[in-house]
Length: 520
Image (cartoon, rainbow, N blue to C red; front, side, top):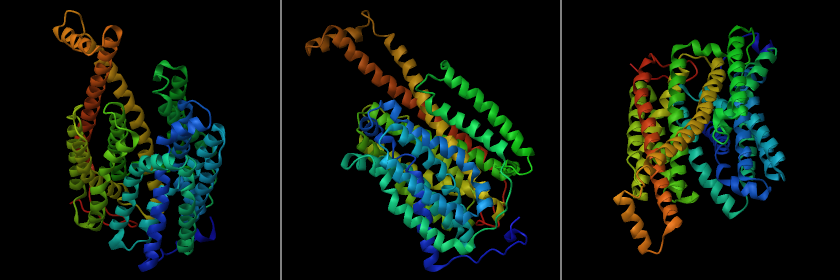
């Protein structure tokens, strides 16, 4: 142990006034920047692929490499913070992330971009968990709910702004600028965080590196992330590559769990899952994020593929989901000690379910205003979801466990998003194929409806194969609409089930590092 851990150092007094405000801005901007980079590249892939002279499907590796590295790095947050200190670890993570952003913008080939995106994801791992931990550790007890609300707002809003900002920057300037915009934010956030918090560093412990655990983590999580990223493109288990990744992921993760639970110095503290509220909170967070992220992926995809929206208008239609969340999150955070957390969470899941069922009622004639209204209403659910669930997850934890708990819960949040993307798109494609096959069964020469439609097309000068191609296009559009309804309906059912699951959490929802929570 270092000298700093030979005696338990008293926790520094909470920050107040201007320093508290500056710290909040610095940590929030760093979190916003990191989460923004998980989605900002998505709409720029065609431009990146064209500029680097590669196929569009190869360009997606700029997204996959980042997600792969981040999934590996996030659960290591607790070990890194314990080894080097939370403040130092966070500040270095922000500054290295900024450096890698510059290198991504300067990349002149796909291998260079993929390599720097991987390194960017790797160094980003501690940023989001530690921003949450540092906020809670340095806020006055009576304002910790507000701190959690502010942190949740950045997690909520950043993925919504990513595609909007990415599309605008790419269209108006060029794709490297989606990385260069991180530079001033990262430098200011990194330096400000260090200057404000360097004298409030947490104790460190020189633990030996768990090499076996680290190798198993990289193999298991890396294989799982690659499988999820490439499964849809390679037709899942019809691909030898996907099957191989699935086997490696299953074996490595199984051995990793067994090793970490028995090793004297585990690199990831899985014993946190033995805590009842942490376990229930992580289950609810994972399933909730799975449904939320799945709907967030499917919504703009449906708008662009089926409804004919371009990327900009799909983003505009999606954006209203963050409006109510921005207004309600601070209110919920400020009153977190007075609220029944399980009841607030239940309201969130019931509202999520209602909006999913609302989405499943959309048709090809649904107008923009009605679509935007449904997204606007979902903001109530977003605000009522993240803050109470995070409080339940942190219930009963001490300051020393916060970094590990935040890292582990954010890992489950991240990997749930990857599962959601893969499974939502898979189900959408498969149900569209099934519905298309069923609909075409009715297209025969003996069908009066088919004959009537062909006659109308012929009156418009469309006949022969062109007419049948037109019919196939209509059927495809309807099949995608049916598939969209089915997936949204399924997500609604899962959300409804979470109304029950969240009540398995047991009050009181308090911790020595976070705020007191309601729940009685």
